[in-house]
Length: 289
Image (cartoon, rainbow, N blue to C red; front, side, top):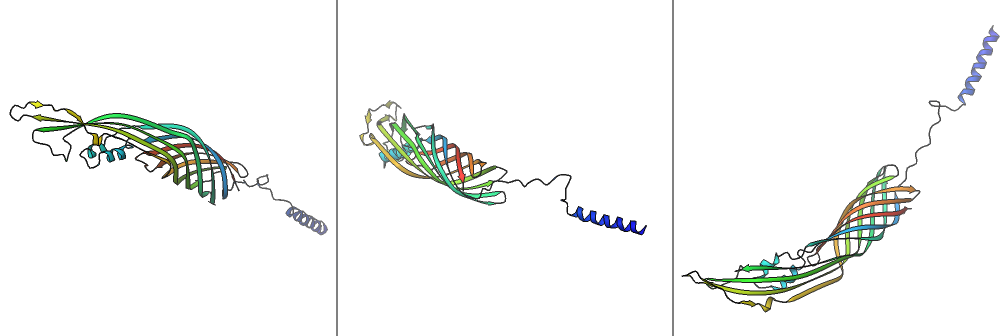
C-alpha cells in the first residue's frame, strides 16, 4: 500500500512540472497582436489643388481719388461717403504645395506649416456711374437768400486680381485611428494687381429768393472745371498682408503617405481702399518622413 501511494505522489509531481511548462491560455484564445497606429510626428511635404471663391469690396475703391479731386473744397466731405462701386464675387481654381513639421503627444498633434497657393486667373472688375446733388454744403459761405446746388457726377471703374499667396500656419489636431482632424490659423502675404479710376463732372447753380415775394430765380448751370477731371491709379504685384483660419482632415493611406481636405477663410488688408477676401476648398496629397 505504501508503495502505491508513493508511486501516485511521484506521478502527480511529474505531471505538475510538465503542466508548468505549457503556455497559459486566457479564455481559450491566444492574445491579439497590438493595434499599430500611424505616427504623425515628423516632417512632411505635399502638393494640393484648390477651388476659390473670392469676394472683393469695391464700395470705397475710388474714395482716395475723389478725395484728391475735391481736396480743400466744400465737396470733399459729402463725396467721401458716396458709394459708387458694388461688391463682386468670382471663382477660380489653383494649385500649390506645403511643407511642415508635426509634434505629437499621445493623441494630440501640434504643427507649423508653410503653405503656398497659386490662383492663376482669379480676377474681377466692376464699373458704375451715379450723380449726387449737394445743396449749400457745410463750410460754404453763400449770400443771403441764395441757394447753391452742386451736381456731382462720378463714373468709376476698379479691378483686382489675386495672383498667389503664402501662409505661415500654426495648427492643432487630434489623432484618431488613421484620421487627423485639425484646425489652423495663419499669417498670410498675398500678391495682387489692383487698379482704379474715376471721372468727375461738376456743375453749380445759384438760385436766389426774393425775400418780399418769395419768388425764386433760377440761375444758370455752370461747369466747375477745377473739380471736373479724371484720375487713375494702378498697383502691379502689390504685396498685401492678411490672415486666415480654417479646418481640415488628414487620412493616413499607407506608411507615410496621407491625403487631406480642408476649408480656409482668408482676408487681406485694404489696398487702394479695396478689400479682398476668399474662401478656399483644397484637396492635397503628402508624405511624412
